[in-house]
Image (cartoon, rainbow, N blue to C red; front, side, top):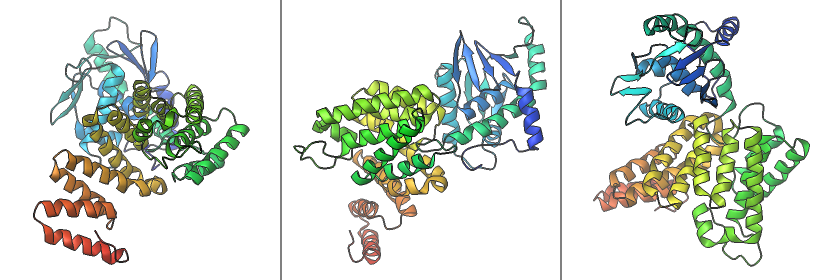
Amino acid sequence: MGTGGFFPPFFLTPKRIKELEKVSEQGVIRIGPWTLDLSSGEIEKGGARLRLPPKAAALLALLAASPGKVVAREEITDALWPGVTVGEDSLARLVSTLRKSLGDDPKDPRFIETLPKRGYRLAVDAIPVDDAPMAAPAKASKRLLAIGAALLLGLIALVAVFSMTVRGGDKEASAPNPLIARADDFYFQYTREDNEAAITLYERAIAASPDDPNALAGLANALVQRAMRWPVSKDDTRGEITMLGAALESGRLEEPAARRHVERALLLAADAVRIAPDSAAALKALGLAQSAAGRFDDALRSYEAALAINADAWGVLINVADVLEITGRGGEALPYFERAYEAMSRAYSSESARIRPWQARLGVAIAERHSAGGDTAGGENWYRAVLSLSPFDREATRGLAGLLRASGSAAEADQLCRALADHSGGEGC
C-alpha cells in the first residue's frame, strides 16, 4: 500500500472493510448547499456532481462528523496519513483543494474555517439526508455523531483502494499494460530515439486497444515532445529545444509538421479525458497539448483538474510552473516548482527510475530562480538540498561555489570544487 492509500489505525480486516463499505452505501450527508456521498466521494449541488480527490473527500467527512467543532491538525494528519510524517504544506494544499471544489473563499470562508495553529472547522450544519428536512440542528448533530465514525471508516476504506490508481507522477499505477509501461519508460528518457520508440509502442497499444486512455495520453505526450524538442523538417537548423517556452518563441511549433503533431495530440488527449475523466495522466496530457497550441488558459484549467485528483502529480506541477513563466507570471511559478520537488521526494521510492535523472535539475533551477530574484540565502539552501541527495552534481556544486565566493566564503567554495574534481575524473568547477 505504498502508493498513497491510507487506512484508519484500527481493525480493518477484510471482513470489517466489507461491513464498513456496506454501511457507507447509503451514507449521504447534506453540508450546507452540498450533499456528500460517502460511498463514492462525490459532492452535488443543484444537480451538478463532482468527484472529490479521495483525501479531500475523507477530510470533508472528518470535518462533517463534528460540525462547528475544531478538528486539530494532528487529528487530521493522523487519520489521513497514518504512520507517515507529512509537512503542514500537505494538509494546507489538501484544504485548498477541498475549498476550490466547494467554491469556498479562504479569505471569507463559508464552509471551512481555519483556526491558526489549531486546526479546521466546518462552519455549516452537516445533516444525514435521511433525517427529516426540518430536523432540529441538535438532533441532526447528535445523529451525525452517532453514525459519523462508521461512515467515515467506510469512506476511508474505499479511498484506500481508489487512491492506488494514481501515483505522484504522470501515469496511472493500476494494472499497467506491459506495452504501455515499456513505452512510458522510453518516453521518460527524453531523447529523440527513445521518444520515437515510445510513439511506436503507444501506437501498437492503441491498435490493440483503441480506447485505452493511458496509451492515448502517452502518445499525445510523445507527439508534443516530437514537435517541440527536435527539428521537424530538414530546413529546421535550431537543434534540440528542451523548454516549451523556447520552442514557442523560436517559432518551431508554428511549422506545419509540428502543428499537425500538436493537433493530433489534442485529439488524442481529449479522447483520453473523455474515456477517463478522473485520470490525472489524461488531464496532464491534455494540458500539455493545449500549452503547445498556445491555449494557456485551457491548459491551466486542465492542470488544475489534474491536481484536484492528485495533488502530488509532480509532472503537472512542473507544467503549471512552465505555463506561468511563459505567460509572464513567473512570481507565481516558483512555489509550483518547489511543490514538484517535494512531491518527487515523496514518490522517489516508487518512481526512482523516472525521478532520479530530473530531480537535481529541478532543484538547481529552483536555486537559480531564488538567486536571480535576490534571495541568495534561498539559492544557497536549495543548492545544498540538491547536493544532500546528489553529492557531486556539477551544476549544483558550481552554483553553490559561486554564491559562496560572492559572500566571502572562498575557502568552502574551493573545497567543494576540489571534491568535485576528485570524484569526476579531474574536472571541477
